[in-house]
Image 1 (spheres, rainbow, N blue to C red):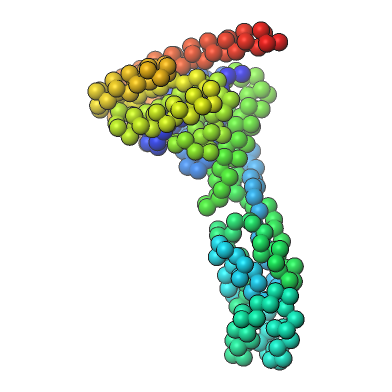
Image 2 (image 1 turned 135 degrees about the horizontal axis):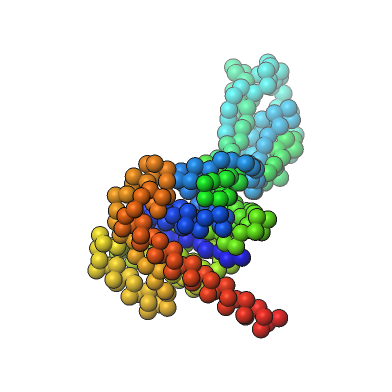
Length: 344
């Protein structure tokens, strides 16, 4: 099985549009994986029909049992992330039940006497505010549960998003949605890739095409580690030149062969020439150039891949890029087979 991961050092280079066209050109012989889980948008072009949906849990989140919580404030004192907040009114009758005997202050194992005194002072006129955990601020460190004298706080798995399997007009798609403020997107990316591989093996597909996240962070590393070939899509700008080098350095670090594609090259031909020359110096092969064409915008509005939106220079360029890329994939797969035979 061959894995092509399409990445870019920055967002907005046209990576997803090229991936959608490659998927269309590959036909039913490829499984797609949208690993840009923080801002997935491949589904906007391919109009998938969802067939499976699974929750993704990662990390922990503190949860307070209101029946056991005594509102002592120990968790509030120890939380360094300001995740503990005073919310709705506490247990009904709490103010009336207080006899001002200072027993709670003398017996509290945490000796948070200043907070207890403030609670006692306030209890003469109104009920203390119930303690709540802000799920967006909670880091799941467990300190509040460790120091809660009433053992009212537990750590539960955090729901961080969902991953889905869908059917599109060009084949199967594995994609995901990371919840707002959720972390561990690298782990979710690994889940998407693993499911795409298993789906390809089940369906007898020879290729997995991965729409990777932009940048060079953890999600990108998770999307490209172990891939057969990395396609770096860049644009003819100084920032595009710089970010192409970062992506190339990442591919070299993980010993993944790389190719480049300069998108919208005709907006600045000189910089496009510089990028290709720099890539050649680094031993990175050139898959080709894609020109600027308003048909890309029209295709996005129609929810179609560029190569399916009608004839044009841009579609022809993408076809040539796909041809060079697929030939490179075939050669790399053959080289790996020969190497495995020698090692075996």
